[in-house]
Amino acid sequence: MSGRSLTLVLLVVTAVASSLVLSVGVAPLTAYATFFTGTSGSGYAIGQVFFRLTPLVLCGLAVSVPLRAGLFNIAAESQIIVGAFACALCGAALPQSTPAVLAIPVCVAAAAAGGAAVGFALAVLRTRFGIHEVIGGLLGNLVIRAVMVGVGAHFYLRESVHTAPVIEAARLPRGVVVWQGFAGSAVNAALLLALLLLVLVPAWEHYSRRGFLLRALGENPDVVRAAGESVPRLEWFAMTAGGALGGLASVSFVLGYKYFYEEGFSGGVGFLGLAVAMIGRGRAVGRTVGIYGAALLLALLQQGGFAMNAIVPKEISDVLSAVLLAGAAVAIAATQKKSPRGPAW
Amino acid sequence: MIAVLMGLLAYSAASLLIAVPYLFGALAGLWSERAGVVHIGLEGMLLIGAFAATLGAAAGGTKLGIVSALVAGVVMSMIFAAIVVYGRADPIVVGVALNLFADGATRFFLRAIYDSSSNSPRIDRWASGPLVDHVHPLFLVGVLLVGATHWVLQNTAFGLRVRAAGEAPAALRAAAVSVPRTQFLALLCAGPIAALGGVFLAWNSRAFGASMTNGRGFLALAVLVIGRRRPLGVLLAAIGLGMAGALELTPLARVFAIPPWAMQAVPYVATLLVLALRRRPQAQPI
Image 1 (tube, each protein chain N blue to C red):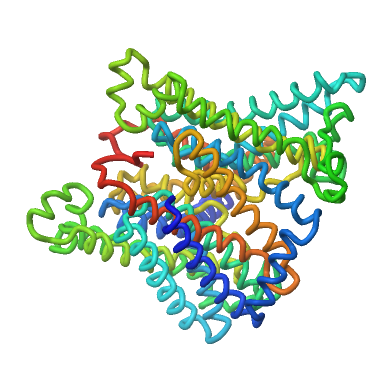
Image 2: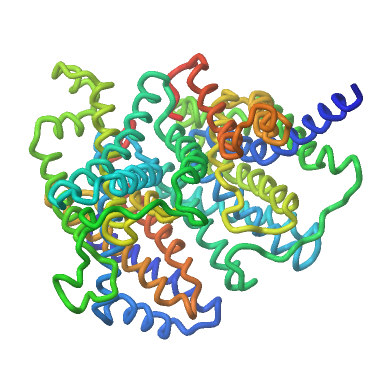
């Protein structure tokens, strides 16, 4: 997104925010003051913003990789849920004596595998059964939500809606280890994983052969066939990779915050991943910066809404995120040449 | 014997009731998609219709509830149409934004107006009595709308333009008709229809609950696809989905010891199966 269009969209968001704030009888300036202190006024606040940033970055990547290939990953929400479940079960099942250097990668891999399985399933539904990945994804979200209620009940601790805690060795250190100011915040080492992937994945997309093929798939599938590659296999790869990234988005919560899987923990972050991917478009470094910026923006909105909750209902952040997303979609369309078919991400 | 008959009657009645929101949602989606605009935001439209109906009914009775919902439906689809048709933004993305907006805004005002994070106070039922309880008037309205949609699409110039906007926009342009304007008008038809689905939800539960649509808007999309984007097909698919959903209320679960969450998943899995096994007519976007 260009700087000018971003400014325009932010103006619209501010206008909507002010109207909503006024409608509940609060002065906008008061609300904004609370917003700022709640997001940057203390180490805790900053930590919380980064804590929310982590899954947003990963969900943004989860959507943007398949998007390169012209596929909509609308099932990021299911991917993070299944990934979290796999990670939590794995972490709880490991023997207590497992060293951290083994426990953490195994659990992280489990999270990725869980999400990847969902992505792969959707890809197969698309290529083998002709079910568009958006419909499949939306229905898949519903199926997984229903199934998780039943499966979860089997694994939850008695009279709770969460699984057994993961072993000590699998737990990620909190931000307070690095800076005293982060005390009390849930920000943890998963942030590093997110940032690492944030740099690696767009670079890989831009510089590798497979990344090139993914982009080609999105713009002109004939190029892929001319290169002797199979379109369905590439679609499988794209959706599975996206799914794995979505699964990884759960690591911050499961291994770094609560240390178990809890029903409802994701709270719609998978759909916000779409917003992150849309707003953060670009190539290579541009995409890294873009996704970071978009995720930061949404994380600020989320944390800010939380901070304002006493005076303004926190749901305002969802409304503003939606307006941001719609604005970004218009801004992107305005910069596109009129393309005859399909998105040209 | 009588018991079986009564059971079947109850099952059919339940099927029709469950089918109503899917019918309205899919019909709204039909108007949108026949004009060439994919409508992922049906979930949000249903939710907004339900909330507006609740607010209106609380303020001034049932009639005001219906009117508020219709107005909200028109306004919301005007905004959606403006962004998608004139802003040329990707309809899938804007649809997701619409759903997010609707869920957030309804919860926001639920907190602001009723100071509750989950439910509004109860609203009156429209009418009651044995007939209404079994064949809700909105189902009949839905059937009428199915007929009306078919008639308008097939027999009017407007309907022809809408179909052309979706199937052959170049031809429409050649006839010097504005494609965006036609799509805009088609979306304006879709809005109130979806809102009526929301009205049903609000009445059925006698209140508005946070996220009460619970995925029905997405299933409506599937109903649209299964019904081949035709009014009659959509009606049959909606009833079929209603029957799948009504299985949860039968003794089937008890007899086969199927847990409740699996019964909940039956409609979703059934839909996926039907989608997987149908003959693909031609390469459709969604």
